[in-house]
Length: 348
Length: 274
Image (cartoon, rainbow over all chains, first blue to last red; front, side, top):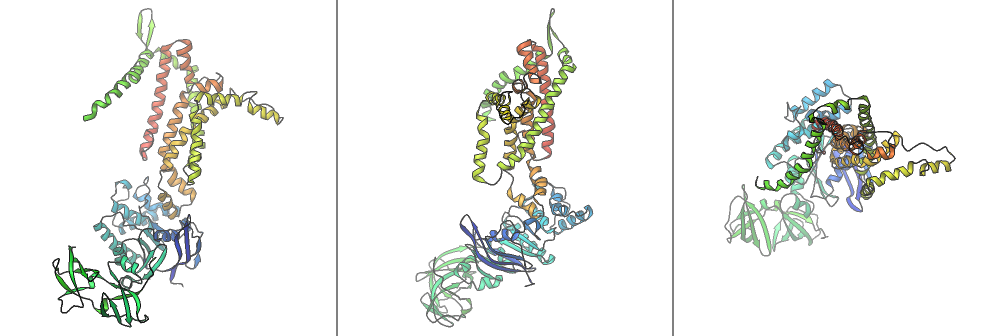
């Protein structure tokens, strides 16, 4: 219990009758980098805003270090937020923006100056104190926004898609910087994004959400390798999701063939969903394969080729460093380790 | 450059109706018709420096200043209410607020006369309560009241328009950094609304300092303002030269106040009227 800095207990939120959050339960450990991941409208930003105090849940409890903070206004919470569009104060320069929170705490001038200088150093913007906000680039504004939040030494930092407006290269740099900062400062980060790569590369824990409820909580590796349902499998990376039948433990039938697998615990002959990652399918000669098919399309993606291979009525998406020409017949090899079996979810 | 000719009608218009009349006013203000014909002189300006006229000038500026301050004090909260989040009520409020502006300005001012008169509505009500009637009409306060009533929308609307454009996230960001609602207002909302405030001040101060109808109707001619003075010179006294000189002084006052305002405005974000 002491380890958990934030607990959400059965938290629900309605907006004019539509449910944004459906009884969400979540605990966040001290010093972890937790990412709320999901498509837009899944409730991830609402969750963040409830933790930040900008929304009050309709029911349920928000516990901060074990104390209910449901009705504590944002300015009394020990969390700070980095907003999606930065929300820097346009009538103040960089120094005044960053010092805003410190001045409210009535710190003396020298301490404020020192703290601002240190934090600017941390975000690689030394010497930018007197710059106007409007004269900064997107990436620099982003850093100022992070500095403005971090300088208050919050116990938890909330980040609402902070890298959304940056271009790819800058985004990747900032991802690494953010992760480093989080490790160095030992602050709990709660990060909202719809970008699965971002989530996978930065997080200690990923919370996948959809339609206001949590689909899966786990480490990036768990979530990638053991998705709990087809939605998670599809949202985190690309997947081939095929209907199959679990003949018995460690033995599954799909695409008209029988495969050995590593899953167990299903009833015999239970219909299941089978997930195979595109990069886990090996393209081999037809003799050593367990599936055969015809190449329908090939796209060059840089590191690998993406191929669509048709076998019976199933189109397999395959990522491979070797290329087979369109129209050729190839063999596909799927190893037991690469087959992920999931309970069938009734289609809504 | 291609469509330059499209601006010609406007240039002609401005020449005929703004530039030439202005020149004429300037010309009248520095000339005098004597027996020897037309001579150039600064006499009219000198005459304006007489205490009796300066007093009128200062009274005009003083009343306009009071009016502007009252409009700001009344108008700012009003603008904040209008810019608030309650969507349905907001439209109705803006609507109600704008309706009086559709009515004729004179009519509105006459309406105040019937309210404030010795046997007007307010005094009737007071006597009904067995209270002594009040001297309301033809006072300085009545003039200020008339100005505030007529010019309040010019204060509220620019502030409202700036306030409603302030990004809600900025307010949330300030709250997030520990600012309570008073601090949020002082450090974020008010500074960001300054362009609107400055537009509002200019838009109220200018008509207030030049008005002559309000002071005549509600002041009963006892409180001559600079507008009345100009009106008198042109319509009743027939001294166009002196009238023009006063007009030039008036323009100077307005230009100066606008200059001060716009300089102040530039320190902050633009987006106001000027």
